[in-house]
Length: 425
Ligand code: AMP
Ligand code: GLY
Image (cartoon, rainbow, N blue to C red; front, side):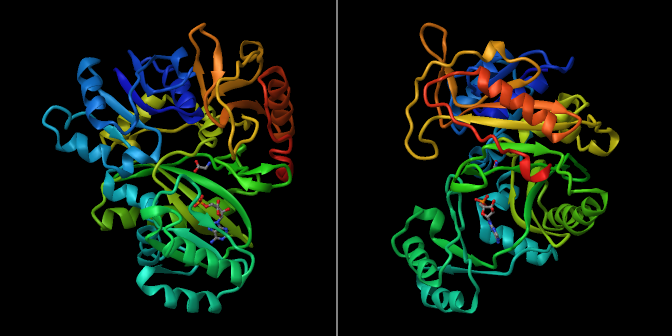
């Protein structure tokens, strides 16, 4: 089977790595991919949301399955585009249609979905420019810290957590009146702050049944000790030790099953990954957010832990036969540490030559923001440059391997967090 994978991050390198292990794979194409994905297939110079160019490539390369990495094409309706097209409609797409992608594309929809389906989440209300007076009054009834969320996709920057009421009021006005996040912030949710430890659970859905993948914890802040600005993710650990069987049973009963049943009840035929961001509040899981795709860098720990054929899993999703297959997980602990560009998540420069990737041993180097220059050298091409995934029987063992790998890789401005996983040891 020929597969087209959309996206260009560490997540897509991890998918490409896993897909390429399948005897069911003939040829893999990645659009646009990065220097890492090119080891496993052919990178196509096509943006992941250029539907017409994707259609051309699907026909030209006789693609039989499409896997969507990032949220953008899903929220813009790539799956619906395939279903509506005479030539493409029978080619399965892994990733929900527009209706399911609203779980991520609209925080207002997603919160209302949780409420309708009795799924535990922080209380919230949604406001627009017309109802800003009500929003400011509602803020006064909440307690610090305040959680403000732009309804739409805002490149991971749409959640703001001010510490004081005055800052929260200023922020709400900036979002609703000054369009700080553009159209994505035309509606803003004011939400109750949930205090606890965050983790994520990943679910595969074929529209009928589901399978739960290992849990993961992401390290979002740039600085050690969870300080400084938010990033796309500086590292991850899977599975999460405190997500024991008793906790995961609560997650399944109270969150996963009502989510899958809710989608069915609402006529949403969801085929793909559901990423459930959770807060463990005194032992009880509450939903922070849904994403309609896998996480990055969570994919770099969760997918290598799979001891099953990923192509077979995707085929089962497309045929609604997920209940017929068993998903095996390796009994190991995976850790990934992300090396980023100097200055990230603020301004940074691309084009720094990267050396040492080939010297990495006992660790997988999943490339994220990389590309090849005209001399065939790997150069930086993004804020998050390379995710170093290691396995061990303990988090400490995996972390030590990933740090050794991070020291092996060199480029101007390299930075990574040395404390990934420390809070879980
Ligand atoms: P998101 O951009 O939706 O991933 O949210 C960014 C981060 O904001 C989350 O990962 C949480 O750390 C935090 N967050 C979002 N909602 C809440 C909440 N209700 N209570 C506490 N933290 C939250
Ligand atoms: N690592 C968080 C995300 O992929 O949204």
